[in-house]
Length: 310
Image (cartoon, rainbow, N blue to C red; front, side, top):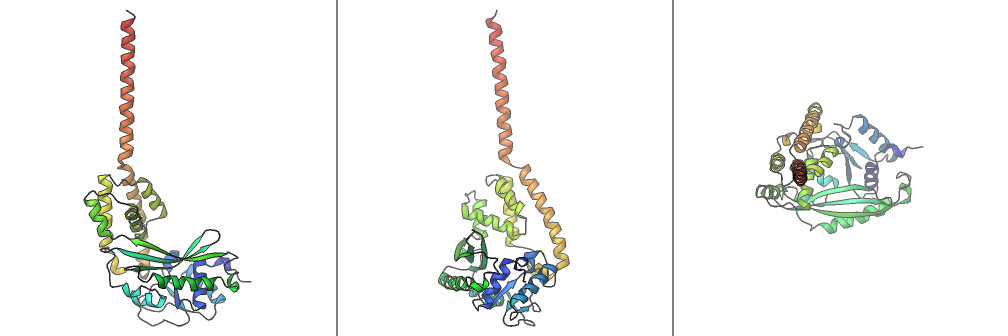
């Protein structure tokens, strides 16, 4: 009997969509499993199981520039595949926008297609950066086809009996880093969308979830030291010195070293933010002032009592 539980749910969902011709291809990325190639442990296991479920599908990983294992009904081995070409293979509706806007300078939109289960859990199927929302209807049409395919009874066992409620399209406005730099450098307040963008930048650097939670809880947007740090981080993201080497899984040995550096950097950032918090220092000063005032009142009271007793 096939053990469906041993395979990543997202990989199964996308393989079903390829099998049903809703998607031309899907992509399994080693980086999602902290691996570098399709020949690493977890990646090999996922491919082996998927080949058992879907023997007609072809798994391509011998191509340039490598981004992961392409799952399709045709082979892409031996080809040169740019980032834009990969978007075309995966069926992204906004693929033509790839070189037509700069999301660091212009407002853009992230449009996702997500499957929502009856238990409330969500799995992302497509996430495509778009210049505007003109192609939203194309995403809606794809989502409808996806929902029909994924709800077919023959796939229920693969999903371990989990009931699909619906397949939704979600649109998120993407704030360019230029806006953040302008607001932070001129002491303008950041709104919720701006702060979500900040968290997204932290995520894109590869920092842990612990770091993201810590940042939300401890970062002070009115703290000059914190703001200076954030401006530096944003400028680094805008001019990322490792961008010529992306995807980093093409350099597995260097990627491992980078993870060690990233962990150390994260630790030092958390220490800096914690050490330079203003609210903590203000609270301590306020407490000390109150204590001093209380002691002063106590002394005066004793003095008055002494004089009254004479």
